[in-house]
Length: 445
Image 1 (cartoon, rainbow, N blue to C red):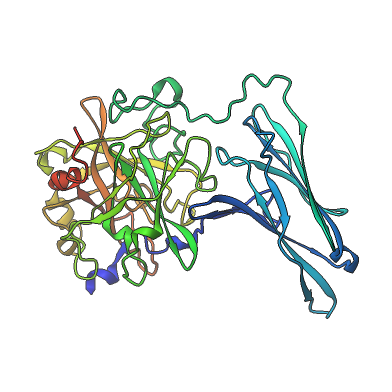
Image 2 (cartoon, rainbow, N blue to C red; image 1 turned 60 degrees about the vertical axis):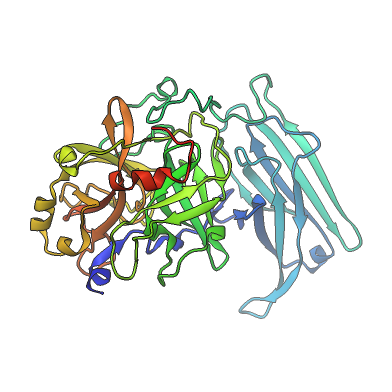
């Protein structure tokens, strides 16, 4: 129990971020919500104090998209119900929930204006390339309801519009592991703790799970093939130390912005299986903190979705001592936020087990033959809350290669945040390579 009290297990606070986000401004009342097996829908609400509007009301939603619209499916808008309420002064008003069914999810449309009768609920300007502007008008009457969907503006040239753009689907047999599509990346990979460019970490994966009907970001992870994802075992236990059901887990490949989980080029996947190493026991020890997520269908590699290489052993930990590896994720930033909207990376050095143990007696309880320590101990640079399960990669023979999985840190005194004045503990993937690859008989290094 001593270990549990002094350690940060990085996934502990991660249900603070539900998988939904506001659109058309934070005060619009409209948000996109991800519904399992269905995808993204828009759910909104509006208020009116005009009793006449309860019988006859018009709701108008305008949106923009950068893909060529299907004239037979421009989306739908529907008022779900009318709820009579009273305010603190006992005045009656009506709460009006409504639903926006999206015509495309690659990428999600940008809602620019919502109007209820004469009241503009939101009105924003967005910047999108090759924009098509559309309008949905829903008339709610006492007896009948009607929907009008129309295209109100198209770009001068539509030849550049495409139904979708995954940047670009590649032959999985020819895309080597640990290689970035440098033809489409204009920023070097090493950024020293700064926000990374989309596509620079195509193997970085986000892990989500459901709790109380809310979908929350849990951890980072690493794609190592078109079938396998590697992350930390503790990512699949909730704050009450209960195992998260595999059916309640989903992963997003190619994600960049946590507020835009279904951007063009991302892929949401429900796992075929979530496999925690049999030696991992969350309540009694931190050892063997590693898990493998198996993807049901082999993923198509793209500009944004590519695997890192898996370290080809045997190779002792001593061979990486003093080397600097790169780690990235959406974890807590220097301002104290639980998550950053865009992923950041940092370069950190690996230290010997002896140096790690000398630095703090607690490490004698949480390190082993299958872990190693890394970090600067400068209080600012390194993985933190929310980065758990993410990769530590090294340039090995010209390819970015996974060697460590972010596992554990010590607590900052008086808080539940990681202490970057101490080293961070990583699970060493080398002792587990045979176990990892056993989940895909076709895996090759």
